[in-house]
Image 1 (tube, rainbow, N blue to C red):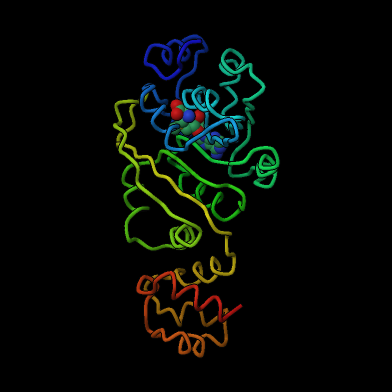
Image 2 (cartoon, rainbow, N blue to C red; image 1 turned 120 degrees about the vertical axis):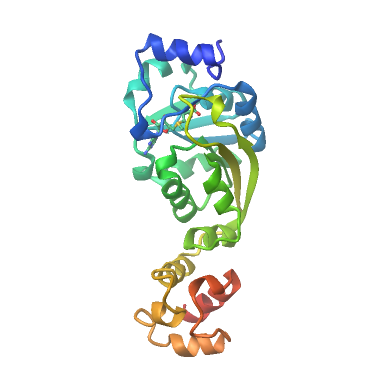
Length: 268
Ligand code: SAM
């Protein structure tokens, strides 16, 4: 079968089915097989593994995922790709779901864990909703083991820096986040304006919704003190900050994850 991730096959598919990439859906198609293999290798996929993909597009990544995984479920918002899937993915091990991933039921996906040892997300994400997708996975899933995704390079650098926000602190609480490698903008059709990068998030621990609530409230207004951000919701916050030996005049960025976990433990 033809490798989709090549300039000639991608152009052939786009021409054959009269598909023009839609900017509003962040459609940039990977045309370099070596990069696709490299991404998939990072997720250590085998037949014991079910993969969730967001945005298969014309299937460059899906095809290689299907080569190694036990099962692939891919969520795509754009129904124009149906004839491409009919041509390339007749196998029962690939399921394409036409749905906005942000509206998809995470519990439904997690039932795949009944049959497969590992559940991983691998995707070349649509950049306009990168953070929302990662947030959904980190805050709504309990059984996903790992996320390997391509995102904009500058976002990847921010995600793996010391920058703090509720999502990144929650990821830190659940596991680890790592910058794997940079991907040139020249391996896509059409080429985006900026380079991309692959990040890996390993989720080892359960999501803590109380911690996430405290983080969201604390970061509501970055310029306010921690005391001012939390006092409306928690009447006893002054005492708790004192017990946790945290200066109530601190700003949200000055506290570390352990500080937030201490506050949460005392509040709940
Ligand atoms: N995986 C393909 C590749 O690597 O060549 C395409 C990746 S392209 C960057 C992003 C894909 O996400 C597009 O196919 C786009 O239609 C799809 N997409 C955009 N918004 C989506 C959403 N809310 N839910 C599911 N898929 C979405």
